Amino acid sequence: LFQERLSRTTLDLVFKAKYALRNYSDAREALEQEAQMRRLADHLSANGDIESKALAAFTYRFLYTSREQLYQYGDDRGGSPLLGKLVADGDRSSSAAIAVLGAHPDIYPLVVALRACDPALGCNRAIAIQHLTERDPHNAYAWSLAFESAGQQDDRAAMADALARMARSSHYENYETRVRRDLFESARKLAPDDQAFIATIVRQTRVAGYQMVGDYRNTVRWNCSARPSGDAVYNSRWIEVAPEIRPDCLRVARLLASSSNVFGAYWGWRQIYLQDPDADSRARAFQNLRNAQWLWLQAIQGPGSTRQVDGSWREWTATDWENWRTAWASGDGEIPALKRWLASQGRPVEAPADYQMPPL
Image 1: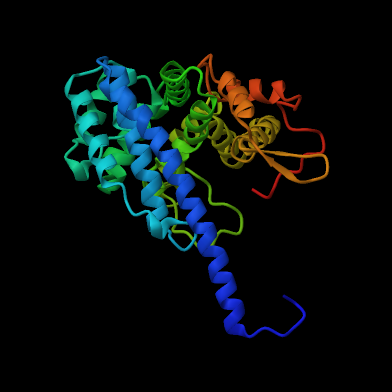
Image 2: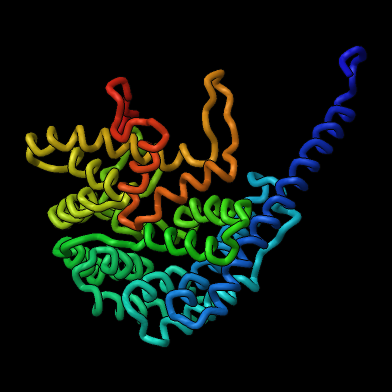
């Protein structure tokens, strides 16, 4: 290939062929993984109990959302031009969510179905959130959804009320860990001897929580955050123009810092360190922030591949994904599950002495 000079046109054709093959391979892999997730969703939908139907709505929603992102950002995601949107999965998700919410379920299936409730497809999300805050008024997660809903309407009075109620809550529980555990267990029961199928479900579910997010600028975390150092790009946060909300924002930060939510704990300790007027409190928060940030980085960077001694990376096998699934089996929270998995790999559960925090 390099013995003779090649024209620019020839090189362009070679690279186009290379990326076309890569995109085709990525698309085939995406289709295969989606088929496995849809198999689980169909199985859950066919079950009679309300929790299974809520989990089906969640799984269909994940399928729709992940494909929608591929379709929207086609230049960045290999194979997306070959795929298109999964409108049918979006319809299945909302139909299942509407059925669950209409049955006046317990708190857990209510929360799970809310994750799949799409107002554009006829699901009354505002009423569902109201039901959740009435039935679980001491859970800050319920009020965080109310805050986000009010933010989408730019209703500052409702936002302030939801923030105050969130600040007075006793705990924060979004049931993310229980959803993962239940999906893993459902996959294992559906095909107990099919390790490849179970590994696919575990792999896909790892990213489900990150993909199924709305407009983050309407969330409490965005509006109560101190702007990162050097950030002159994004619009100002609500806390910058409404200093009266600072005490409630700090109470919310302390609440999330004590939760079992990996990113929530990191965010909480970060805000305490940056915003608490008490210098001693900020100093005490620093080590917790350092540990929380390191743990969060392990959550988003660790699963899926393992760094080898020679510096190369090895993609996870079905056995690796089974070890990850086992760590979540107790359903006792994201932080305990992640620490359990790190310990099983012989890795530290707190930031090593040589860990250098990036600028805040």
